[in-house]
Image (cartoon, rainbow, N blue to C red; front, side):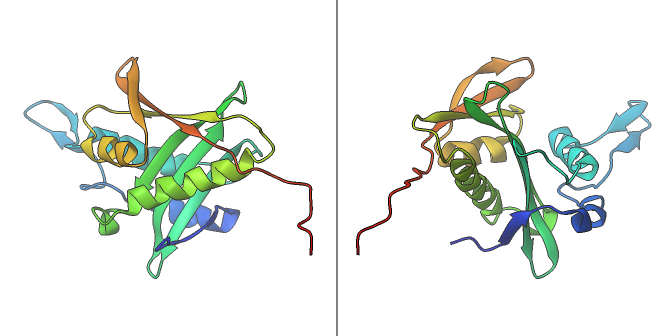
Length: 177
């Protein structure tokens, strides 16, 4: 049972998305010794930046889901139907810093998989779900593994994780009374 209230993002969510924080510190700091900006978890900063730039109006082949608690946006999930329409790609799962380490990432991923099953409803075959994960991001690797994903291969600097998705069967038959 989800702890958050999940819905597709709308235009009213954009201001809150632009202030979403899923990493600490919230910005990279200039390191005078290294003479460059530095962040201890750059993968989190990259996801946070992408969430802030996301468009809420998505085509039918894509979804931006927002999970809310009593304090606002607690998690964000973005996924899309692959170009060949034979699977889905998890583009981002982000959990607000204030609720991390409470299973919210797993909830976001499971809710997203349910939405994907519904989106793929009329299909009669299994579909693949793929995600690219920074190998330094142990929390994401554990979360995806716990949700049935398996490491597949490297793609540049990222690990590719995959799992099968069985679509919801849509029946046009009415149950007999």
